[in-house]
Length: 336
Ligand code: XMP
View 1 (cartoon, rainbow, N blue to C red):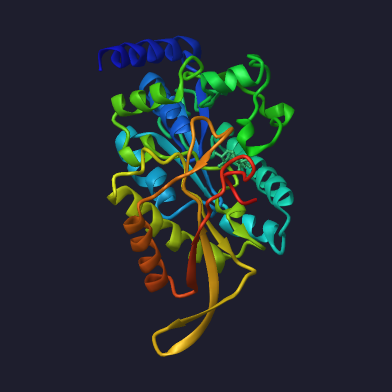
View 2: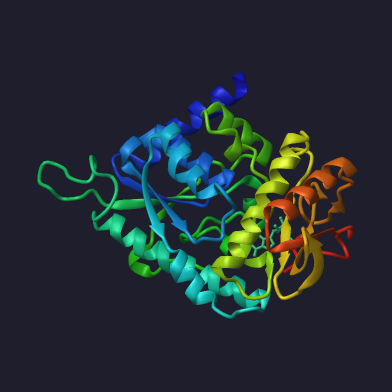
């Protein structure tokens, strides 16, 4: 697409001019915005960019690998991965209140990112080829790349100010000694343009077309306390639901498709020779324009049937599949 080629080239040139010979850091979330922003900046400044990916263990099946393998393979980006799964689980231990979960996840995210950023800044990680000049002194990391889109700019009143980790993690800024200048190459673009740009940059379809996904991830799709076992159950069920939606060719029409584990509810079932005492899950497919309002999606019965059969066959702990038919309002898209 000719326009996208121009937008890409102009943005790359603008980033190159702004960053010059300095280094930049970027937090990858697994979502399309940060991925496209990082890929673009990578094309502009190459190894001067280091990306940080905090694996909090709350992503869906395959999403961490998409970042760690596919994204890196396509972009050649310097990636610093932090496996923080144990840390997030420990911090969430026994917590059931949704807002409390959000606060904890946001707080831990910023702490882990801070530590990782410090390692990158101090040259203990990433940017191997660029951090040592002839004198052996690392170039300073001056810039933070963020995937801010035009609607985010409008929503927040248009200011750029000090570095904020995108507010979807519901957290404030970084400490004073980690203040960066912002690079926001997507600031003038809408979501559909960002996706087109992602395709232009050759990013994998799974990333470019990913539906919106909340920062706190599966942590707010387990109704009840978050445990490793519950996350694994939910990940399996969610993967099946997404797979069948994609197979039916509906994944771009459906705005979001949360799968929610009612972890503290038990339901009686009969599977094979015996009665089971498992958990119900809720399918929550919705259509929407902007997440402000939403309608429950009328998925074809045969698609729902396949999802239900597969989940109850393949995920031992789940013996009941339900569909949420509430619009927003009054129901929110997520259950927590
Ligand atoms: P609700 O559930 O309020 O969600 O209808 C509206 C949109 O926001 C997403 N969402 C979140 N995104 N952090 C996020 O980054 C959050 O804590 C959060 N809670 C909800 C939700 O997935 C939907 O797209």
